[in-house]
Image (cartoon, rainbow, N blue to C red; front, side, top):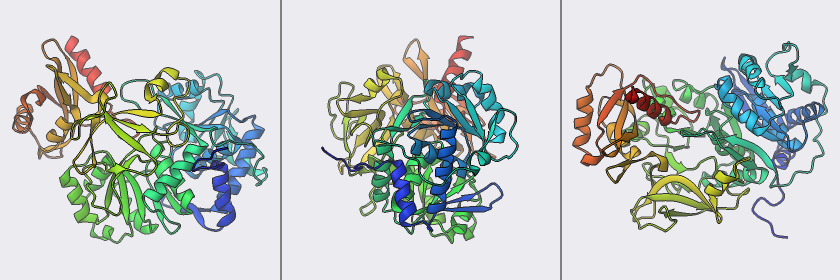
Length: 524
């Protein structure tokens, strides 16, 4: 019998090992909407999880069943995640901001049998249930008096034993289905196994040298892979603590880091930009943050401003829901380049290829593909979607759909999503590269570039722009700015100004909505 890095471990054993080894060590510190802190030691957390596990079993949840967790950041979200895992069931977390129609798709597609939610989200859940006949029960957190037919979370666990359940769980058993927030098609249900969670907890915590004295500031939503992968599972693996905030606040980010003595955080480009948009408070520099790792592009000016204000080292990396860990990351102990996504990390092999799967030359853009072990170091597959699984997983390689290039020093640079390549008069135009130029205009706060059908040139390039407060600029000014910095075939033909962009749950601009709206208007 051969063994991998995860051995026979699963999520349940990972938690129970820490609960036995360091029962009195704080695991989760939750800051609620009123800034009150609620601390759960490893021992107390595990006992509460066990009680919920028995409660869910009492409701008829069995190994292999899917359970929807429709909650904002809260202790109940974490209790639910680990209790579902201990049962051998499968968590299906969903975006608490989803309207009923959007919520119904992952719940129906996953065939979830139960949903766990909160009072302010109950109306949407009840509407969703009409389209999801498999959902037999709903559990409501945060109230002792739920409506008829709804079960109270606290009552469900009150009389349950704190002993662990006896359920045989193999490392390759599914632990979660995370639906990707795609910008062009129906979400795909990424199957995350127990081995995946154990592996990524090991791999990522070692990449960032996370130790038991670290405190992870968690402001990103728990329903998304980033917070689960990079923050909670790494903290569990290292025996560290995770400070979970009810909701991200740009103005309070560093004050929360100081209050809870946090040392590390995971961020995205949008939250960093939001923090930088706040008036600078010099007291925010009194933090103990040693590292913030992030994904998604920032400008050199934004990076410089972050360093000037806060002196928190930024470490850009690359990962996606399907990769589990971080196949590419800037190094801790070597020269970093926060404008690039780093070198390959331990446990991964990466290539840059053309559409036929042939390696491209150094400095040439191509699709990033990653070798891994499905169900251990990369995703197991897409739930109930063999066609898209076969497209993504080919001969042990995960085709990411992301376009990158490798520099002469071996460091990778993110270019764009493959689907964001615009075809114009036979030329491939990277929407991301055009956006980077538009964002350099002193009046521009954010930009999104799309291609729309054009009878003459295949596609026309249109830039959607959000201006900075108290600024004004004409469409022609933006176009002339681009003409001075881009090849003629890359310059947008048109510019549209917006107050805001439609966004996915992970702060990605939903370009498909912008594109579809523009196409519909042009047809009139």
